[in-house]
Image (tube, rainbow, N blue to C red; front, side, top):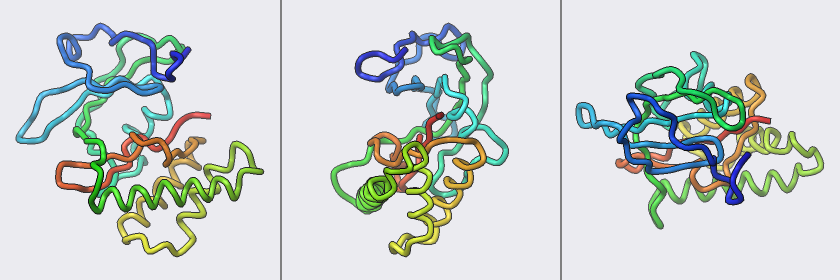
Length: 191
C-alpha cells in the first residue's frame, strides 16, 4: 500500500548491511541507502520490493552496457514489504539526478518527450501503450547515438521477456553518473 505521495511506506528492513546507513532516496518500490565507496566507486544499497526491479538489476539476461547501472552484488533478502514481496538488497553504483543543462539532460529530455508523445499516439492500446511506445523509439529514426539505440533495444527486449512496463517519463528513472553519462536507472515497473 503506497503512501499518498506514491512512495513505499515501509521502514528500512533490519539487516546488518543496512543498519546505520543514511537513506538517500525512496520510490514506489525501492529504498536507497548510502553504501561504502570502494576503490573510488561510490555505491548504494537498493532495497527492492518489486520482482521486476529485482530482475532488472540481477537477471543474467538483464540489460547491461554504457547506459545501464553497474551492479556489484546481490546481498539476498531482508524481510517482506507491505506489498507482500521480499525485500532484496542489491549493491549498485551511485547515480545522480540530472542537472539543469548538459548532454545527458538533452538526451533524457528527448527520450522522455518522444516516449510521452509515442504513448499518446498508442494510448488506445491501454496497458501495452508503453511497450509499443518504447518499440516506436527503437524503430523510428530519431538521431540516437548507437549506444542509446542499443540500450533502448535492450530495454525493449527486457520489458517483453519479463512482462515489465517501461517508464521513461518519471524524472528519477533516468539519472547520470558523475562523468555525465545518462543511465536508465529504474525504467520499468511491474504490471
